[in-house]
Image (tube, rainbow, N blue to C red; front, side):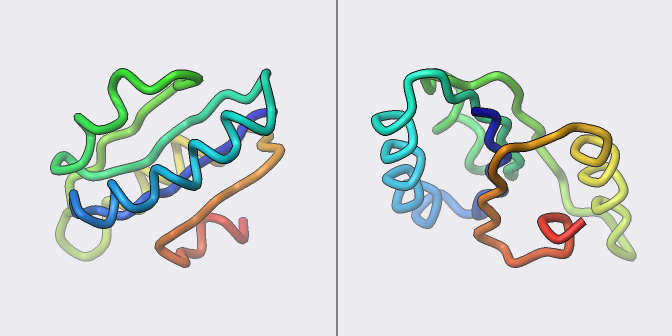
Length: 92
């Protein structure tokens, strides 16, 4: 199972959201995660089991960081998208 996880940007929220990842790691043996996160929270995910890809996004002027996120996630097929930011990326 390929899962795209668009996580929170701050450390405290990221720690709380790891329970969601833990749930899927325990439920599915073959799940792999691709994570989109901020530079502040990236270290929490580095040694995570099932991590296949991580995109660290720095916020840019005029929302140009969304182009980087779109490029990372658009042409891939995901079995599940977990978007804790309620962005348009998960709908596309």
